[in-house]
Length: 133
Image (tube, rainbow, N blue to C red):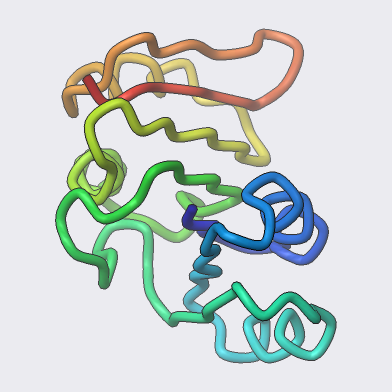
């Protein structure tokens, strides 16, 4: 499972708990400082840390079962490219869960346009989920 974006501490811990000791978690952020802080506070041996951006993920095609993103699109100029990158790295049936600070009404269209299915937003929170068919 990949955890992409800012403020990853508590979210990464919940992802680690969800995948259990046999799963792998990749924490990706464009900030070295954020990753170093996360590493200092994370004791799980199944977490790897990687510097990267949402629109240019340094991951192989179809290498991720699930992707959890938080504030990953704030500094991305081409959000369609980021959605395409999410699709590229997910395995078939993989799910993206994304939380951003601001709800963007074009998110559903953006992720459908990238090829995702079952795209849903929560009107009460800036949250989106989608599945790679």
